[in-house]
Image 1 (cartoon, rainbow, N blue to C red):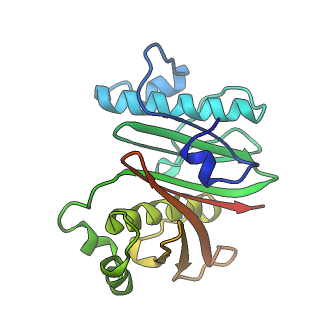
Image 2 (image 1 turned 45 degrees about the vertical axis):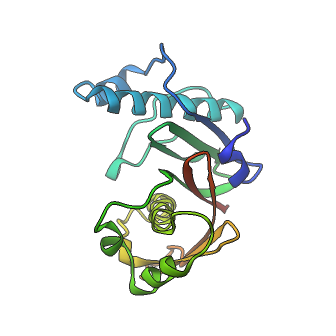
Length: 213
């Protein structure tokens, strides 16, 4: 399917995205149990983003199956696949690939608006703070930095099974729609960096990472 995610990710990655919550979407019983006590907004996000994930998996030829949150909320993908999901106001999206083709995917979507007061100071290293002040890319650079860090974490965790703090990755944002993340901790077998892409359009900031297998 075409869209923002397809623009960002390689051809061997299947994507799907929606800008509203269609009525009548159904969950597997095990998924329904996860959100049995959730508020309506959470239910809509959870349901629609999994619908997107199943559309993308279908494009890979993978049958529909429950996608349950596991350790630290990371989605449990069907055997032989990797993926990432994201949602924010007016956007739900998912990207998946065969594990034989792609090692890991990180995906994040954010509204195109500056971060709330105090958040940048909480997530940014001094070098990143300076970069945000000087970046001239027609995009809220603080929000772009936050989104890139979220994509880095989503790409990092499935490989390492280790939490990555905001200050443990140094992001270099390019005005050309790319970014690079340097991991500041050493973990045997863990990646020391990621290359990603970003797009700013339709009221959204979207970042992505896809690491070849």
